[in-house]
Length: 249
Image (cartoon, rainbow, N blue to C red; front, side, top):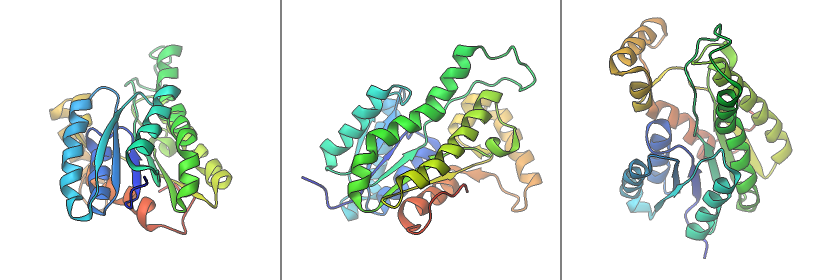
């Protein structure tokens, strides 16, 4: 039986931007399917926060473990959503990976490492879209949001592979907005620096704080972007932008 509440899948949602997005949507009454490939216990903790946020509106949350680089896992995630809630109304492709290598160091990434970044950051979203598309079409309000990166348009970022994968994700967003409309809207959010737990693990807490301070000193609003800020943009695309598709924010 299909749930009366709309349902969203958020990949890579055990922490940071994915978790913040899931919690905000739950608070608006969305059932949430959280995903993690390794941090399943963290995702379960986020699921509890989602259920608390959505309690008044009857929203529920489940965790579907899986690696989006694997097509079989993507299909299992979509199947888990349908089994639990009977519908998929939105998909947020937030899962991502990188390997930090200066772009000028052409020997710093071998083919397998380059392909792994593309497998998660580009092929993963494609596979999740393919697995979810039939249910999204049936929804009548289908929405896909790809979490890309400002690195795609600046040529900066943690590595050449990362920036290139996000550039390709932007192109796929534009192409699928045309191909999947009018039943499904497809948009992307391109964050710059966002101070999340991932940044603390990736750079170390001291360096992440230093980068955040530098960022604050250079931007007009004099503040570092938080996960909740990105979540606000994603939630708008998912739940509030009924006439918007093919946009890179």
